[in-house]
Length: 67
Image (cartoon, rainbow, N blue to C red; front, side, top):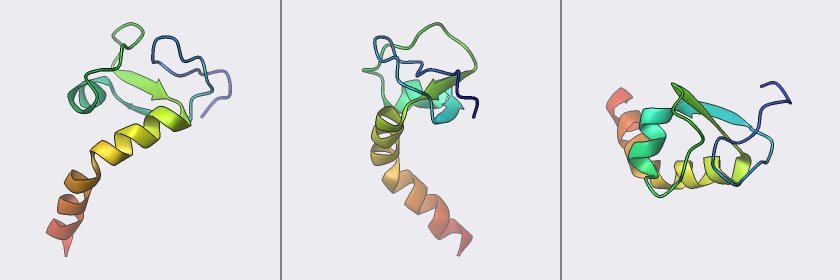
């Protein structure tokens, strides 16, 4: 990920680590105020960690379907 990208959450400003679908992020974390409405939103490490915690059960179910 380019180093010039910043987190897409309003008021954060940290360096972005991941890029995710805006639709999915809004579904999982509706309390976050995102900057603009692009297709993908860049998240810093802290906000990505929040996203991962909220989607843990869903990801486990997806993995179980593959087994």
